[in-house]
Length: 317
Image: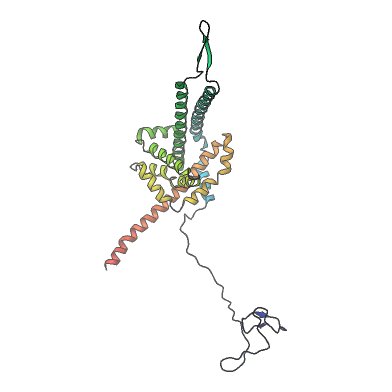
């Protein structure tokens, strides 16, 4: 094998000039001691291995989490039927009230706009004119529309809480009864669950105004709130939200990937019948992920607390 003595490029045997640097190969390069030796390319048989620091994770795959969720739900989908029916019914009623009030309000507004006066009757020789719909009627329908919108907002917020608490009960082997769980929210929880979920809904909506994506990310930050409220009865709504943000830091992307792996199932859920399968499956899967993450967080927290006294003792020596 022939190499260029100037740049080390591989050459053909009959080459007179280096095609890389143009060096005249007929010249001979003397060494420092005056002897003439050919250029030798240094090679190494050692393989270079790239070693990177391992990222801290949950050491569990999405497939394993889903498999565990399906195992917990095996033979127990029927427990969720009453809860799902009640939630679907509440959403239908709230949506119907809103649409009915919306149609009445804007229909009456258009009638007043294009037909401001109507013949309502006549006196001796002339007609009297009145507005077909009064301002009080329009204002009443507007209030009904706003009230229905608020009702839809509350139903959506509380549906998340009920479904997540049902999933927690399923994982623990307890019966998932959404009606009893909702009654427990009202009677025994001092409204902290209701307050937390309403705050989460408001925060998520406000963040979603910034081109939607921030709202999606923040929904992952608040995902553990209901789990923490169920875990600790003394935790307030604001403290649970704050702790959820702290624990979910660094794991929001993993959670969102898990959540949106159910995207096509949710598209089919428009027909409602698949809700009886996808709602329990998705919520139990997400709670299983949050339970694994919480245990991981507790282990890390305990390890840090154990290291702190040892480090302080070493520093005092």
